Length: 385
Ligand code: ADP
Image (cartoon, rainbow, N blue to C red; front, side):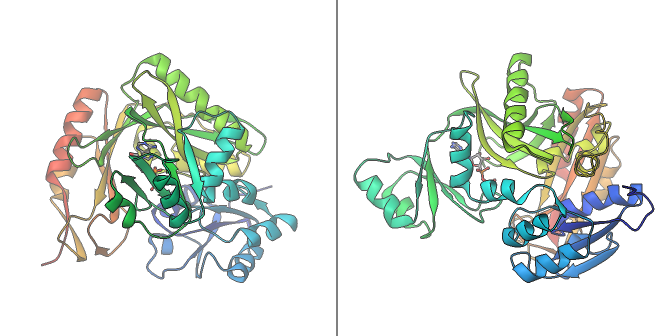
């Protein structure tokens, strides 16, 4: 198949920032792209060959979109799977496959899959609704504290709560959920695995999420993780095992916990480019977005090694500001060597909305970490007063 400067069209379901960054790569290769997103303001509205507005959960909308393209991928998991099943049955290459997406869309099903495939994960119970969970707590079948997760449609931590008291339990929404044992972890790690249609596999180095000591929010994604080589090796092995179990095609980001006795426990996966791999645009020989494309088009995978140390800082809307966004002090951070901001293209900021990220690269990890802190302190995502 000739993808380059041809009539071939890649369809992408979802037009958020991940789609936007993927489009930088399709532009590089001169591959045509069609994007479907519900919002006319989606970050990917400019870079695609054609941009379609429509509901990603609607069967007809997704099916008809799929009929216009020669291969289909996603940048968000919550899409209509029946339409993808039908498109696949009619011969369209859909990566990741609807089968994989079905296993991942529901956190309960995803956890069952890990157990079935002998992949280490924290203990959990599945519940159809809040009443069921409450009765298990009352009968002491589930002990507090535990981590409550809504089974479907949670995103960026909004479907996750630590339940410590009866009041916490009362405040939960009445939806299908899981109750997980709280893992006392030393580090949160992630491994991105790229796997092509023909089975070529490469892994990116292990990354580490560094948390703010008080706010308990991820502040920095650091590559390579500052961990023991043996632990890194174990994390990579677990990542590969997960990717094989799913028979995954494309990128699979495997989020993990490193426990205090250096065991690796899988938290969850994302079957697509991931926030934990954004550093790769500047720091790696081949970015995660380029390798996602290579994998789903069955092209040789690019080198996943890093050229330099990379740290990513998310740019989220500051509390107390809503409205037209201003990136205060962006010139100041751009004056520092090795600092590159990525602006996702959302005109309106809201508290905690993901508006962009900044990558810091440096030959020296300690220097990169120092600059990352300076960046974090300097730039502010606020609104026009
Ligand atoms: P989301 O899909 O919203 O990203 P995650 O499952 O990744 O949700 O959970 C969000 C965060 O909550 C994790 O990054 C981690 O810090 C914390 N967390 C999740 N599960 C557990 C657990 N079993 N034990 C301790 N902390 C957890």
